Image (cartoon, rainbow, N blue to C red; front, side):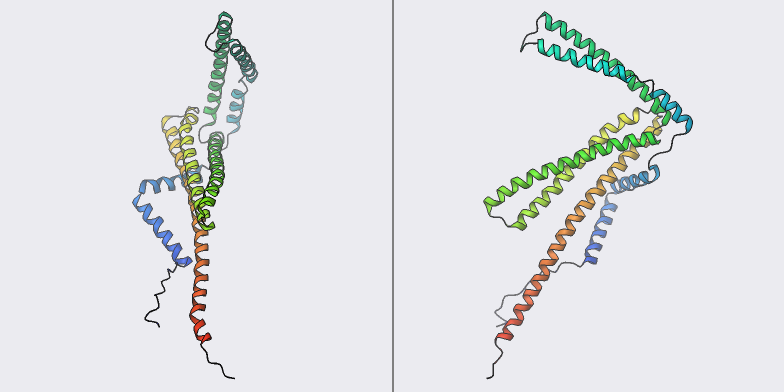
Length: 289
């Protein structure tokens, strides 16, 4: 009886075109509400496009840069570092748990003198390196490459943290899900959500650590304040744009995968529902012999 049969409610997922338009409308609405964030993102992309790999050094710049870099005495720094490591181990071996006798005090003074010598040599090397960088300039291939190396170091560290943390989360969530008799779909959804959280946390922390150390790199090139500020703001926005784009693609891939799975489930449910509605007509068809 159709009057007594329960209503068949089905939630229809939007088509691919409709889903794409929803995403575009959401991004456009977010950009209009948060103009500072969207402006920083676009400026970062523009900075990446315009700066590229940096300007090439001229012949005179290369000659001056290499001449200053060759004055850095790496051998003296190596010898001072070796001496400091030796005196440090001797001091640690002569020191007691809570006491330090006369021999220990002499070894401590030797260690402190070795460390002071090493610090002086390193400070002199950093000063000469800074002079060489000032010849190249912040927007040169030398400056841009150094900033890129710093960014990739922290970015890869953030990804390694996310992958390692996700592996542990998958293992512990698997143990807990076996005790709760959770379905495979629930387990996969929890792992997917945790992976997104781990990557977001790791890359955002890496971005802030990179920005924190960026000013030290900028300052070492001895540029004028306006140039230094422009490069710092541009590099910060560029790093923000890259991390944001990476996370956006990551979240988009996860959402696309879930959308595809939901579409498959919806199609199967529609097929099964259609077969169930046609089956009574086939079963009650009269037979003639």
